[in-house]
Length: 257
Image (tube, rainbow, N blue to C red; front, top):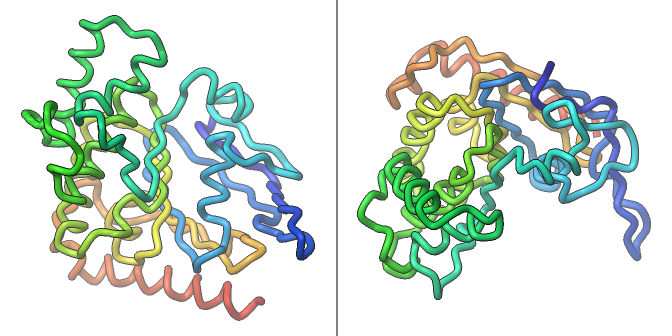
């Protein structure tokens, strides 16, 4: 059974200027432990698709299941953690306090919360920063804290919406490396939205290329790259070949407008 399965998904927003077709006939299966990136031009429905998985948007046609149940049931079962484009940390709470927030809402005991906060801070290499406030951390560290919060209740699925989009390239490279290590250690299923071709190719086992609105899938690329990926793999012919295919898929999507 696929962890996430979308069949003929449509989503149309009703606006004052008439209907906006965000997604059209999107079908995709994501298997357990895969790292799937979604790439496409701005406004192509990548984030909308991710939000459908999270039950934050509701399809107007087709169906989507998460762990074999509806997205709404999966949300109630806390099947996933969600990482937004901005870190979204509360400035009046410490880093530990921010990570505790979903655990408090879920009613975990204090000792369990303490143990979980310590574990996830270690996972994202922020051990020792629990008592700091968000303003005392760099942008990259704040995003790592945001990832730690999404990992705190140990959901098997991580939904990530361009979490590194606002960061400079050096920081982004470092966080890409860290995310791959984290994925290898936790074996979570990750759905990841990005605008960056190198990021999509470096991180993913599968790359989903989407067309301009209405968002359709124009290509699904299974990566031939090994699971162990040092940063310099980006200079290899195999990497460049996948990147070229992604570029071609984006171009093909544009030509069908």
